[in-house]
Image 1 (cartoon, rainbow, N blue to C red):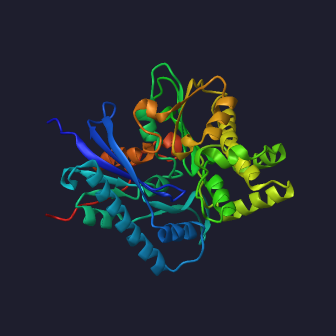
Image 2 (cartoon, rainbow, N blue to C red):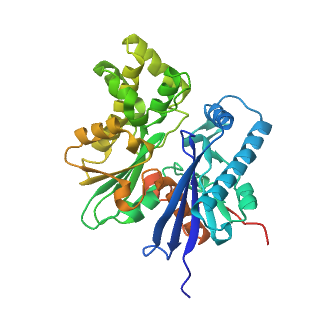
Image 3 (cartoon, rainbow, N blue to C red):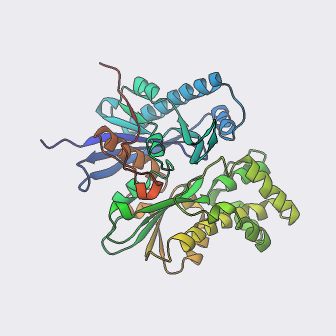
Length: 393
């Protein structure tokens, strides 16, 4: 029997913890003939006090088990509210939505095993209780996607390459999908590639360092550098950029993933100290961080991708796709590669990750895997996430 298309909401809150992106998708079929179309998208901001607490916890400041439990459920309420508000904005009844895929809010990610209580252990933690989302919306919700991949020896990241492969594969063109969120990550899709040939990894910081410097220098009045206005007025200091490019993370071979645990408060303090040593003005340092974000992507491609894979196009998404200086640096450094916004493929730059988690929820609901072991390092494909069913009517 041919199944009807499902309406699925994807919810995404990234490393920057700016708020919640919501995507509405119509999805039908199964790979390799899976059909998915983005119907609409929106976003909502976190209340300032809640965002402050998320960032505090993500920076590994101490908290009690009770505080973590409360934050997990409070975020579940906020994600549920965001889903209902999106339905209202899209003029669609929640009863017509079959499924929600919620990434949750990452507050800890350790993709590589490290010693812990007598055994090397990797772990990840995303909060925003999906049971609460299901209860408040009346929509079956899939959450907690990353642990299944880590349980099979993977990094638990990046997971979006599954959607990248479905969206951007091409018989004749080699493509790289670049997401510029808090962290920059790439998905390498060779021409005519099968899923097992997909490579993906986090290249390093994208917006997380820029945003932290902007917030520091404006005393919290600004949270990001809109249109790179601050960076464009800064002067270039090559010595600062050269030192940033010595970041040890850049040299690690894939599969690899990173986050606020590495590029957090301690890292920002080191960058501020570097700026003082070179007498950099605030906008000089914001400019350096922006150029560093671009060059670390270029370094990752030159180091791990381009020597063995022919790439014709770079498809850019995420908040950093709106940063003209960052994009200009990418174009200047990748002269033989066409740089394109993801909107050219029907997915607005800010919506791709939320759309991806709608896709993954659909696959999980149908008991199909949606990690790519070649990207995460897992030993096997995994059905991702945990299903929280809507309350019985």
